[in-house]
Length: 141
Length: 141
DNA sequence: ATGTATGCAAAACATTTGCACCTGG
DNA sequence: CCAGGTGCAAATGTTTTGCATACAT
Image 1: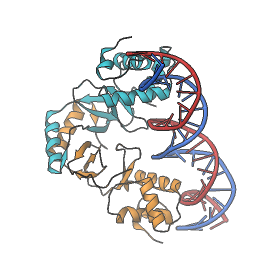
Image 2 (image 1 turned 60 degrees about the horizontal axis):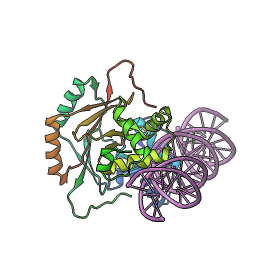
Image 3 (image 1 turned 90 degrees about the horizontal axis):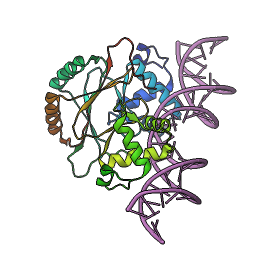
Image 4 (image 1 turned 60 degrees about the vertical axis):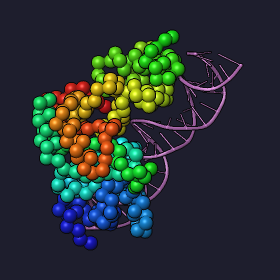
């Protein structure tokens, strides 16, 4: 077995890690909960425990491979960290997540934080709103 | 017993509700977890169950008396809803919460959301950062 | 009185951890 | 071989719920 990404961050290349990374890279929706990943593994006929999924995702986060978000709704979601910063709009009804990047907001955030004695190295801006679609799709939970 | 605020929103005026509202109105820190409220009640020698605290806070939220925030760190926090909108900066190290309002960000949020087919009636912007104080105060958990 | 609220304990979740066993390098 | 990884079950922490009792109107 051989996986550049994993080796690069100093993680032993094990089957669970490879499979989980694979899922995060191939699945259409960019944001998955641990439970989502676990179910995807089962569907790929991989017998990997939920505890391992949590452990691996946490390691990936520490290694900078994924980012964890605590949106509303019980469980945290993970997304691949491609290095490009972006923020999120989450629909409070259907849980749909839309990514965006806005220069003006980024700059003002820095200013607002600085004025209040905060530095935002790692930061995340989440706007909770309601998408206007009559029938919110991608219903979460 | 007689409490305008509770009657106004159509909630029966009970001792737990009155006491919990009282705590939210008098306590210095504006943001409290259910557990925080529960402990404050015990300190006031009120024998109110934690389950009731959760039920009452949820009712208050539905009635528009308080707002619930799911910042990072396990438990949700509640604050009185005084009608004035504001956003939050949360220190990822010490959990300190600072409120702010920035017109430029508000306007851009609207635009960004609108461009993506979202309307933000109820919305919340949370910036996670790190306060610059050497020893982060107000340590949460 | 009577329907609603509360307290307690148990349930329901999401997540973490202890430990014996397995596996990658 | 052997440190580190994994599976399972049990522990944790937060929030919800069922049910018998207590209370506001």
